[in-house]
Image (cartoon, rainbow over the protein chains, first blue to last red):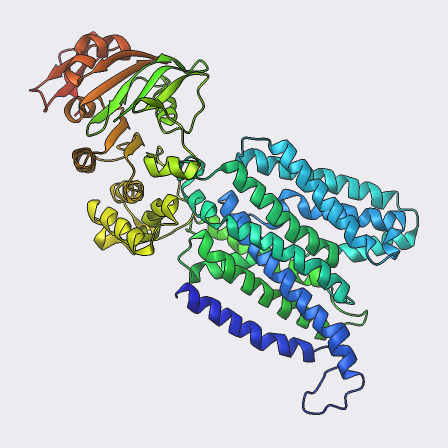
Length: 323
Length: 260
């Protein structure tokens, strides 16, 4: 399938699902009978921002997943690997811990600060060489550090309410998000996507390994900074507005790759559209599934879906199948 | 134009290496394991920083405006690169045009087509790399370098893992490239291939140049015996040399093992 045809097909799917997602929910809106109570209020202030967020975050996760797999030359890489998501989560947890989360702008601001701190630490540890192995290890270290500090913050939580808030937030969800979150996520995601798109040719060159990529004119340090900025902005802002949503970045590039020529740059745009589609559908399903205690958390649903997928990938890898 | 080094040092790996490679010729870099062959090739490809000394392109110190400009000049084939994604041969070859991504698409398509034809890959162009044999894969990787249309071809052990027939075919391709005016520099383990196919041989040992010149003078029996620490003898006529090495055990000294 040509890349253009694949992108158009995925966009068509997205164009079908977006209106459906606006109608679906605890209150079903029938477009043919306009007398649904508060329909315009529900649409404009609840469903539409939520759909825009799902598309933005899903696209960001799909794009960063494809970029991370290309950069690390590893089909099991995930945007969470570099410690940026735990860094952002640590920032958010600290805002709960200090009580600043009560102010609407401070929680995302803290999370973005946490993501920036993780990005800065990554850049400092990885140094000037631009080597992928050192960078990955630095990411794992940042991830472990953020995880440990997060556990410390939770264990020293000033009140049981703060702890409950933290744990609920960390599960990841798009419920009760407003246009405010959209204005945080959209610009950051667009800026991050621009950084990753600029790195597309370097990611292609990495198909042949680091030495060959350098010989093809790739500057490893520039590429590393593009990846840090791209993944940092997208994942940082995503975690800031919706908590941690895993597995989309891992799953989507795998689903799309067989439909492309497998060149990393060919995978970026379809992964972004397919990520948007997946997150939107998953969010709709979470919304309409009847649960006694409210709705199923999006982060939990995707983890439940993602774990068997990850297992299948591992089994494929054990059989030595090609990517 | 030549590609040369002047008193090049890289830590303990290369010490005062001064060599000269010319365009239109095949230069072979030979030496035992750990002699510094790959390090020297990396320096020539401008991918490794020297502790001291310099690499010269023509009369001047090699300096490029950007990594991309360097890539347009120097085509480098690393030793047995691992291909991360199962792309088709045509896609793999097209990666060689990345340094020319601003060039008109027609020009890029022509260069890819020429490289595919030069390596006899027309029939395999849509085949994924995971389904190529060792020889086909080596040809595809070589076509990737050729697609760049660089002034210099630098290859690190390009014949490793190839059988005799494929190795001979690939050497013929290198000769064609040299005849078209490119400079070809190869790290070779097989001394007979270097003796029969190279125009100039550089012998390295422990990071130092032991011999440099035409193969018949750089790879003499004495040098081979001293550097590779074995009793060696060249058989056959120039251009069709074979190297025989006496087994270290006296009982089998009567039998020689033909390497090529």
